[in-house]
Length: 240
Image 1 (tube, helix red, strand yellow):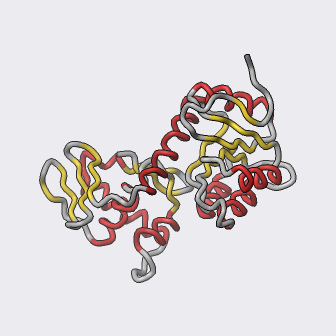
Image 2 (cartoon, rainbow, N blue to C red):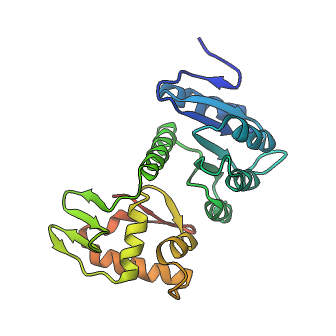
C-alpha cells in the first residue's frame, strides 16, 4: 500500500529526512528509495515551506534542491544554519550540473554535502547514511586516533601519522589538513573551510596554496594518496 501525504514510509532507522524539492516525481523517487532503507520522509515543495518545516519538525537531515520557488535553496540553507534551533541539522544539496559556484556557496554556508542530478538512488541513500554517521561520530566527540585502515593511522595526541607502522614526516600545516579531512570522511570541504578549520588565522595561507599543501601531502602519503579526492571547482573530500 502506497502512503501519501507529507509523511511516508516506516521508521525502522528512527531517522526522518526532509526533502525540499518542487519536482514531485523526484520527491516520489527519493521517497520510495529512502523508505526502503527505513527512513521516514517528509516533503516540502517550495523553499519557504522547507524552511518552515525544518524549524517545526526538526528532521534528522535535509535534502535540499537549489532551484526552488518562493525561496531558493541557498537562502533555505542560510536560514536553517543561522537559526539556533535548526543549525545542527545536516544538509545535502541536490544540484544540477554547472552549478559549481552555488555548491561552493552552499558548503560555505554550512551544507554538509551535495549530489548532482541525475543521481543514482543508491548513491543518494549512501550519502544520507554517510552524513548521518558522521554526525553521530561528531556528537560522540572528536577522535584522537583515527584508524583509516590497518596500515594507515593518524594519532592526534602524538602529532604522528603512521603508514605500515613507520612515521611519515609532515609539516604542521600538512598534519592539520590531513587530520581535519580525516575527521570528516566523505564530506566535501571547500578550500575556505580547510583554511578556517584546519589552519586557522595565525598562518598566512591563500586558498590556492591549499592545493600546494594537498599535493605535498599526497606525495608523502604514497600508496594512500588517493584517499584525498579532488572535487573540481569546489575543494576536497577524504575517503579513507
